[in-house]
Length: 78
Image (tube, rainbow, N blue to C red; front, side, top):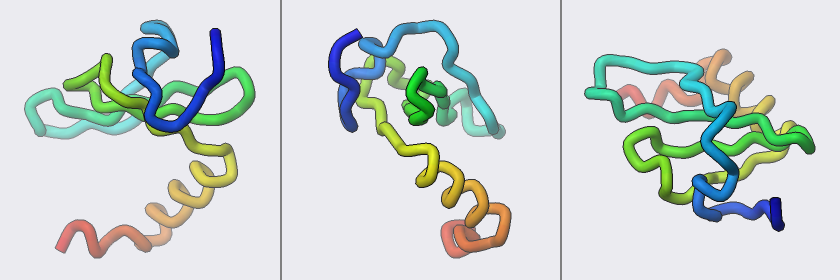
């Protein structure tokens, strides 16, 4: 695999190993996550698996998940 970068086509990361860590009654449009070999995490839109992948460091993902658990993202629900 070549250079991994933010916004790259998700299909370049392969089709295996993508998971839907959460899903809801949204007609199948979910976020999918892929843990990369170097520890970074790629996210893509399941409805557009060939679209761009957002690449996050392990620290950024940890902070996001902890913040969501702590209610820091609750403003998105209002």
